[in-house]
Every structure is written in structure tokens, then in C-alpha cells.
Amino acid sequence: MTTIRLNGQAAGVNNIYCIGRNYVDHIAELKNETPTEPVVFMKPNNSMLAHGGTIRLPHYSQSVHYECEMVLFIGQDSDGLDSRDLSGIVAGYGVGLDLTARDVQSRLKEKGLPWTKAKGFRGAACVSDFVDAAALPQAQDCVFTLTVNGELRQKGQTSHMIYPIAAILRELAESYGLKAGDVVFTGTPAGVGELHAGDKLELDLAGVVRAHFDVA
Image (cartoon, rainbow, N blue to C red; front, side):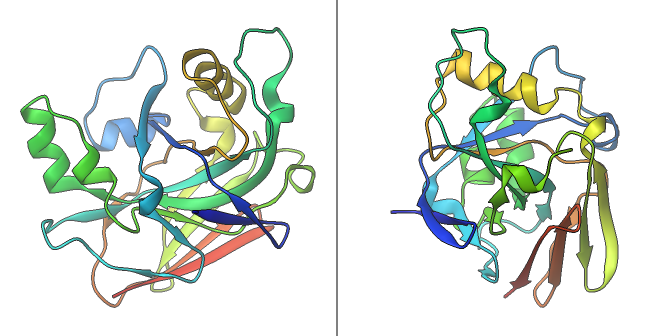
């Protein structure tokens, strides 16, 4: 079973949801249209790579991009059909990388085909350990960063999300049903770029969660 670590304890992973195009500056840099509802896609569980792991770039891509994001770990089931505030179903917060084989994604998008090969390869869902939700009381107003080889590449502010955490949870719960163990990537800000062999990546969320990954 695929697992993450929450407060130092292993917890099983159910589904991996990702939100695309959730920051205006990232939409602009990729020249995409602003969505009228959350853009949701999924990654297979086999794509998950834990903090400290080694990223191995897929042989079929020549342009794998990093995308740093806040990541949620869901602790309670919800079908979204009641009126309660769903923020309480988040058990933990982490920081991660939604890796994208950009050249492959572009070819698939041109043909109107799914993005799975571009988004779901082994190690394409990198995640830190997670801290209890109570450790990040201002989750909708915090900073997360990515440095590559000591150089700051991405700096995001969660208050800049087009669809905030509450809206993401509502959309996922109502459309698909959220389950304990689901992992949710919430979108990336501007600054995405290519990874190369030998790169060393450092991620930080609000100074309370950190992770590192090396590229083989």
C-alpha cells in the first residue's frame, strides 16, 4: 500500500487528486485559459515519491517540469451533500511537486487525449511528510517555496489561489466523494521549469514543513 507520513506515523493513501490552473500567474506563463471551475485530474498511486527520494526522469520525455504546491491529506469521508464547512476533513498539510512531462503533455493536448503519461509516471507526485492541520491554522494565507540547487525558483502564496481550499474540497466532495486517505495537490504558482540530472530540490511550507529531493 502507498503511504505518507502524518505526524511521524504512516497513513495509507487512497486517491491522488490534482488541481490545475489555480494561480493566475501560472496560467499566464503557460498561455492557458482561466478556468470557470476547478480543473481536476488524477495521478496513480504508483507515482508517489516520499521526502528524501530520488526523482528518476522518464525516458520518453525530454522536458520534465517541476510544479511546487501545497498538498492536503484528507482525514474524513465526505460526499459534499451537507452544508457543513469541509475544512475540518483535512487531517494534515504538506508540500509537494506535481511533475509534468511537458513535451508529452503538449502532444497529448493537441490530440485531445488524456494527460496520464505526462502526469502519472513513477515519482511524478513528490510529497513531504505531513503535519497535523492544527499546526497550520492559517493554511489559506501562507507561503510555500521551491529552491533548485540553492536558487529560489517558485514562491507561492496560498491566498492567491483562484479556487481556495474550501472550494476545492467542495468540488471534489460533491463530484467524486472524498475519502480518508485522499491526497490533494492544490495548484502551482508561476516559475515552473525543467529538471535536470543532478538537481537538488528543497521545498518549504510556511516554515513548518520541509522536504528535499535529488534528481538522478
